[in-house]
Each structure stands twice: as C-alpha cells, then as structure tokens.
Image 1 (tube, rainbow, N blue to C red):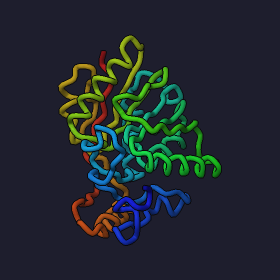
Image 2 (cartoon, rainbow, N blue to C red; image 1 turned 30 degrees about the vertical axis):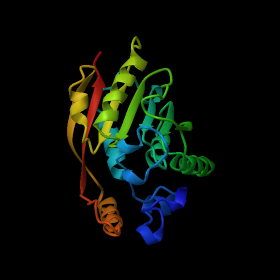
Image 3 (cartoon, rainbow, N blue to C red; image 1 turned 180 degrees about the vertical axis):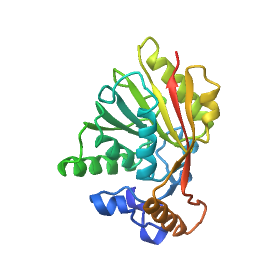
Image 4 (cartoon, rainbow, N blue to C red; image 1 turned 45 degrees about the horizontal axis):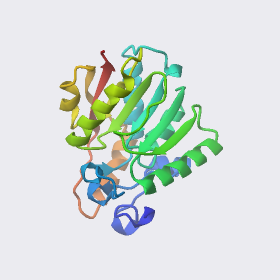
Length: 242
C-alpha cells in the first residue's frame, strides 16, 4: 500500500514538510479518510492523515504541563491515538516522558511510523522509549501508570464515543489519568458530555511562522483542494475528573 495511497506521491500533491527535511524521516503527505482502508469496521469513520504542526504539538504539551497534571512528566506515558506516520510520537519522545506509544489502525502507516522511529532512535533524538502499535483505538490495552492521550482529530463521533467508553473502562480503579490533548477538536462535545473529564483549556494554539508557511504551501498543492491551512489549530485539554 504505502506510496500508492493518494496524497503520498508527488503526482497526488506530496510535498515534504521542513520537519522531514531536517530530520530525515517521512511524515509528510495528506491522505483523505476515504483512502485509509485497512479492512476494519472503523475505516469509514477515519478523518484523514496529516502530520500535526510541530509548533502546535509543542505548544499544546506545554499548556498541559502548565495545567498542573497529577504527576510529573517523567511518570506519564503519552499515547497518540491515530498516530499515522508518527510525527507527534517522534516529537514526544524527545521530551522526558516515561514512554511514548503510537496507535495506528492502518498497517501501511504503522509500518512507516516504525521506520521513522528507528531512524529517530539511531540519530539519538529519542529521550523516551517509543512503541508503535497497529491497533484499533477502542481495543488498545493501555499501559500501567498515568497516560495522556493525544488526538489530532483522528476519527468521527461514533468512534469517539466508543473510544471514551473504552478509555473509562481501562482506567476504572486507577489512581491517575488519563488526560486528553485534542487538536482540531471537532468531537470535543463527546468528551464534554462525559463526566469523566473536566476541560481545563479550550482555544487556539498558534502555528509558528515557519509552520504556517509550510502547511499553507503543502495544502495548496493538493489536487482536490479540500483542506485549508490556518495560522492556528483549535485545541482543548482535559483532565481526568473521576
């Protein structure tokens, strides 16, 4: 599959993000949800693959650490649900988390993420251990200890509801977590209706000037022109309240 997905070839609009050029990895490209076929029943609820802007990810994690989570950063596992090719996973592994786990439903994207992780490790950029799991969000078994879940709008409302139910069951009886970091938070109403979480931030996280320029250029190169770039992402942060 891999390169044959629309959006992952130059002919279908692929343009490298500066993050890839600087680090020798492959996280660029935009794949619409209709092209992310894995054979799983949740395929039709996938949104799209696109790597989060590095400045947005860093800004959101910084806001979360300033929101007084219930443990120090080195005790948390960051779990990226819908990790794609692993850009957020790579960036998180450069921070002093206990570990970083990428969960991706599509096998082709998961394979690319594993290759990226190997490159990242060999370059000495990983402070935290990295693991990539090819799994469905509603079936993934979370590791022990505090977990913070990163979401870059990976799926629609149906899967979000199932995922939140699964998350509550996985953490029933645990003393801490899970917190949620949500970028392009289209389904945040599903979290808001769930008493297990309390929103501690809602607002725009600004892209850096270089990320804004790069993302605008990349998205304007897409043949279908169905996605637009902005200088920010609408985001929210949620603390576990039970």
